[in-house]
Image (cartoon, rainbow, N blue to C red; front, side, top):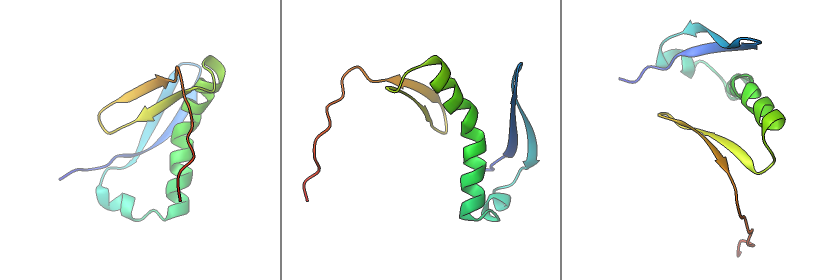
Amino acid sequence: MNEQVLCRIAPDGNGVHYQVLQDTAEAAEDFDYEQRAEFIKKLCTPLVEYLQKEWHPHARIIVEWDRVSLIEDTIGIPFAVPD
């Protein structure tokens, strides 16, 4: 069984620290959409600030369950999506 760890992220001058709030998957089910969105926003704010300060608009961070990747576009050509 996969268990999720819900935590509070607190960036400071020495890095990012977290406090475990609950450690069961059932706790995540208690979150409603707005709470989940706010939780994710708090988690990602330090990443967005890092990108804005240290990188450029063509860089992005992808967070997956087993890795974090910083991706930088070299060439991007948008195409219209057909109806």
